[in-house]
Length: 175
Image (tube, rainbow, N blue to C red; front, side, top):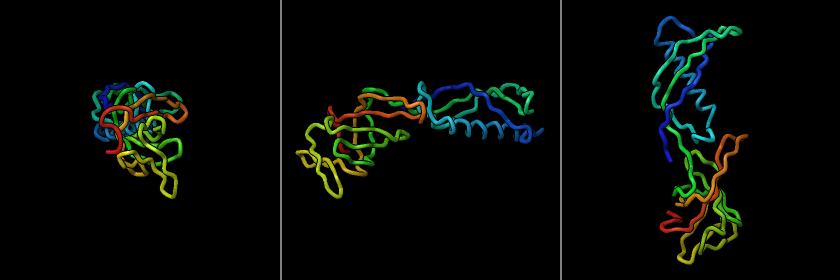
């Protein structure tokens, strides 16, 4: 689900990037904020930080004693993406195994669809392994699949979410 949130942040501008012209300072703050947000990648509570949409407020800068850099408290709006249990999404198959398939959906790289959660599908091994159903629909590499999220997991060390999904429901399966 996409959510627009407003976040407080502290942006540190090195003293060599300081300029008396206000536009150059504002540009430095925006660039540093965008760099910080992309480095952060995701949080457990908000999900993936996708894009800074607006810079709402820039507070008064405070000089840091040790380095001479200036810290600006800012408030900005950001578009986020977080996956929830029960949500129906679409993803692309990137790996087919005997026990299931791995999919990608948006910023989420690790989504597992178990063979046990694909009712009516049988694994077909070979050079191009796939799962095929009684109605001849195929789940193979690069196929887009609509699925329901069964569970999610936040991996702090990788700063990413993982999900387990299924095809049990109406209108789920290859698109």
